[in-house]
Image (cartoon, rainbow, N blue to C red; front, top):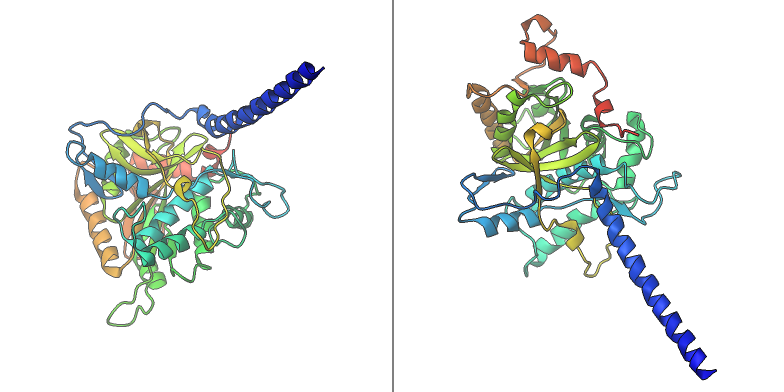
Amino acid sequence: MQCVQIAISFFLLFFKSLLENTQKMLEACEAFVTYESGIILDRQGFEVNDDPVWILGQKYDTRTKLDELHTDIKSRLLLTYRRNFTAIGDSGMTTDRGWGCMLRCGQMVVAQALVKQHLGRGPFWPLKNDQNKAETYKKILRLFEDKKTAVYSIHQLAQMGVSEGKEIGQWFGPNTVAQVLKKLSAYDEWSSLKIHVAMDNAVVIEEIELCHSKNPDAETTMWNPLLLVVPLRLGLLSINPIYIDSLKACLQMPQSIGMIGGKPSQALYFIGYVGDDVVFLDPHLTQNAIEFDDEEFEDSSYHPTTSARISFHSMDPSLAVCFSCTTHSEWKNLLQQFKIMTEAGKKQNLFEVCTQRQAEWHPSSMDLADEAIALADSADSEEDFEILG
């Protein structure tokens, strides 16, 4: 009888251990399976070769600065799917898996703009013994915490999306997420970040100067930090190769904070390029929501261990290029960068830069490529990012 009891006890312990290990395996698989929808997993990291790597305006030679490159990548903030957070409004949703990837990419763009504004462009993580920098970093991270009270939380983005005609749990496109972030930035009093969404493929200098200068009439311009988002349509069903060199030029600019776009039905945050591959951070990883308290908190899940790459030709034609100008001088320099890009000769213009918005649009003055883009823009550009059944 005693032998039977011992055998039963041993079996129960074994079964309990098996259940615990199975649960851990299931959780690991749940975090992994989000990558099974087409992302090329074996093109991660960087090899030592002659092609320079550009990351958010910074150039790296992999033959001499591979470690610096990896440190830079790891310092970027990674916002991914989360689960087990407080339900969003009355929707009952406690995870954004399957629908929130474009929102997460939008978060990453704003996060990079705030990091650049408050901590500078260079690598800063892991944090050293700098209390002021640590507190600033935590303040930035809390703006994206998965709860209603955080300014740029998934809760706020999803609920603000209702005003843009998107139900909670519905897919967003690049333009919609940019408009939502613009509205939310008004509540970020700490950073005073102003988000300008340049519509109709036109960056209008006057509009930006008036909206982002604290006192436009003063001799010395007082400048609100600017996040410029330019939504684009660079083809009909796939990206037109004539625009690739211009996209590369944008990623080389010191003011670049990347691009939000992706592959069809998959949003990605593009942060640079090497050769003919565009480098991205991927939000398609489901992790448990984390609550930040006043004490130390585990933040490693908010930083990438590596990046991945896809061909420029695999990108969806709907995307948005993004730039950050913390000071007015950076804005002036960005305009000069735009001028150089348009005068390069070999590059196709991505958008127009003009002093004032044109009162009238003249289709007859456009070339054939622009006519194709205009035709695509006449349709709902968000449809290309709808999840296919």
